[in-house]
Image (cartoon, rainbow over all chains, first blue to last red; front, side, top):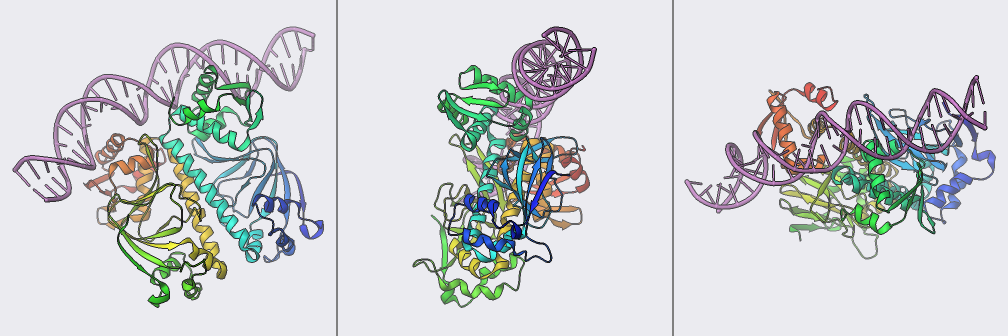
Length: 250
Length: 250
DNA sequence: CGGTTAATTGAAATATATCAACCGGTGTGG
DNA sequence: CCACACCGGTTGATATATTTCAATTAACCG
């Protein structure tokens, strides 16, 4: 299933580099002292191990319905979380980029959606049992975990608003602003966006067709709001106009 | 703001009837022994108190942007959670019925959406500090809290699928099946649904107009799938057909 | 009962999807 | 090195689902 798997156990590695990432992400420091406890593997025979996994473009990391035993952190690349209909229709529920986590929201049950690498991607996999261990020792961690879930929920609710009540132009603009916020890199002529995704992914995130996405991006390009150096790159030249578009004031 | 407010403090009430409700909902029992600790009010000066509040139809329980200090349990009635645009567009993110909780997902920050009573409604309000207290003592409780949030997230993701990729008929059918699942009462001629909401609420949940909702319900009525005894009541006569419709097989 | 509000139905307008053609880069093999 | 094929992206023309606007009917309430 997965290629290029490099597994290591904290008990033998002598350090906890990836968990440090979790700690850092969670925005706490008084917490890192707890991390050493992670390798004790309290769950019936299974040592608590983190693995580094690599996936190639379009490869599934886990699928809707798989038994859920782990959560993941993106090290490099990009991941899409999506649901599929039998007839091929697809809805993307969200994207994950380096530093972000996925697979948290289904402790011990089954994954409710499919995670796929959008490009060559490296992730770190943590068994859910890690959470139980950490949970036992750190109150700070717990509240951060809850905050993480709340953040995802809030994101999903904004997504609902987009799909239910925004026009095409508003959705595209909102999408670009969201990506800007998460992945924008400043340049002289605006803000650069490496989307790392094709038009179909954008369409499936926004509940549109690929043609509609194209047309709308072209419109924004013609209006001087965007530049499109490559199919997976966008330069936002006039953020203010984009914001107005997102708010239906254009 | 709120009418008919009856506040009481556990420290003086001598029992924890409403928290018992939480315990019951969370589906645990070894947990109830902990509930006694709830009234100690550990948070700077504020005693941990639960209040019973009543709201009339269309009254706001809290609004998008309000500082978030409490979560709620519905005792009777029905609550909608929604987001509003400046121009009046509205998206309903979810409904809450007796026994269900809302306001959990924004610990200490601001509410990200507005909660309104859809009909005369009674709720119990718990300060978020309750959670912190309980959190300290019960591992079982924590995992249930996480499960609760995960459940909401999963619900939101299904909602995304509906809004993004389902046709009108599929959405209406899916909506009715969801309601059936949560609130259906068996009858001789089918399953009775007290929607407790108007067509506009359905429309705003499904990202449609009120006219489209009407037409589609009428279609299903004509097809013999539904009966419509009153505007806020629906009898599902042919569940199988409704399921087929929801799955795009009609 | 009248008067108000919500629900329903009809006809026209429109946004978006669908179908189809074309374009442009990228990689491959002759 | 060029020709070709391939894949994703773009654009155009048409179809259609859904909205919008308008009128009618049904439920609710004093």
